[in-house]
Image (cartoon, rainbow, N blue to C red; front, side):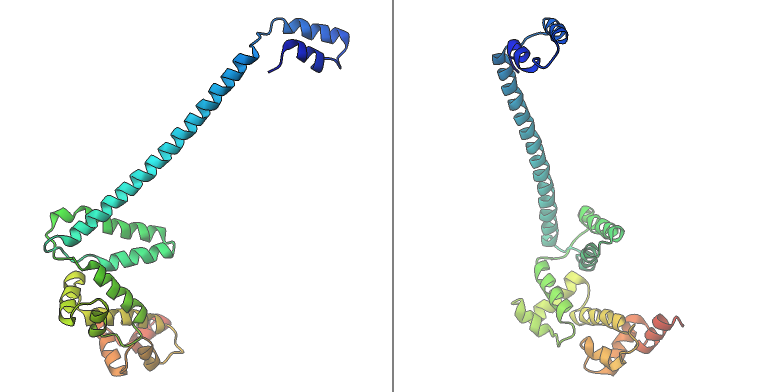
Length: 243
């Protein structure tokens, strides 16, 4: 990047005369590119690198946009399915389990549940579906139940929250989940109770109260209907390993 004479005068002054003479002789055979040409080549190289970086960024952006487009298509398709005449109940439980497995970093389980959801979506055209126009409303109801199961939860309460009549919400809930409102609420409560029953220091009446049952006998009745055994039997089986 410097003139030959400048290189000889600046870089070779510390050498012995014979060494300097030999290097100067070798320099005679080295091709010389004028400074102006080197500067032009440097500019071209800079422009080329900039172009390649731009292409790389554009490609990354294209991939992101493509992924966003695919996600948008999936979302639109799900919405379309939910608005089809007479669709089958959307697998809310599977979706809920899928999200839970992601939070727990359970990769294999998340993959399995995702495949189930994709199977429902991609094979949807084979089936005839019911009205799922209120899917968002049902999601809100399910989320409320999940966080308030230990309280007094009534159909009238939820109907007021989602601005529907109790009778209409009851019908829509059954159509879209395949389960009556009270049955769904009880199943959520029993699921929570099964976890608490593993703690042997808790009394059955305390477990019943903790999951929203005011009456222990009714709790026992519902628990047996859902699990096929009494709370005491369940505790004995899963804490002591007995049948």
